[in-house]
Length: 218
Image (cartoon, rainbow, N blue to C red; front, top):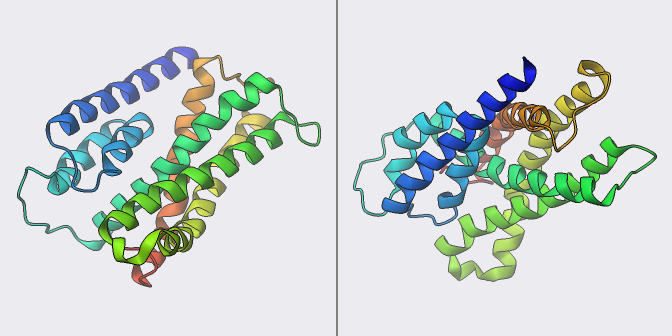
């Protein structure tokens, strides 16, 4: 039954991403990095990503003129989506690296996943944040834009990984006698849930960063 549920959840996620990709190809975002952010979020947020994209993401399409009446919760949601997409991409890239190399840390595959995925999530998170900052503020220069990206994304990224890694630990030590492998749909369904929880734990961090002006509303 869990395998069937996993396939259904993954199919809904990929279908949501596909619908967003089709629409973005017709209505590209003003901020180019968001052309990648929304489809990535579609994978783990499914119908919620579709709803938020068409309600809030479309407001930022180059060829569509709409007044932005979104409140702070919506803007922070989009900022969190941006952060989560970078983390998700890094985590997803890290999984096959650990699986194919058979890497273990302190005798644990889970610790290897934590280490590799955190490093990659941090790198891609900063890259995503850089491409949100630099194109709109080229007068800052590359170095200052990178530093601004580090300040804007580090805390929210750590908050994301707390939620994600916490769920991975529950999956590994509590829910299964033998944890699912990356070749199984159940593994990726568990990862979808991990990304959702990461989003939830990073939202308050993004709210504080936006309120203090460290991170811009999106």
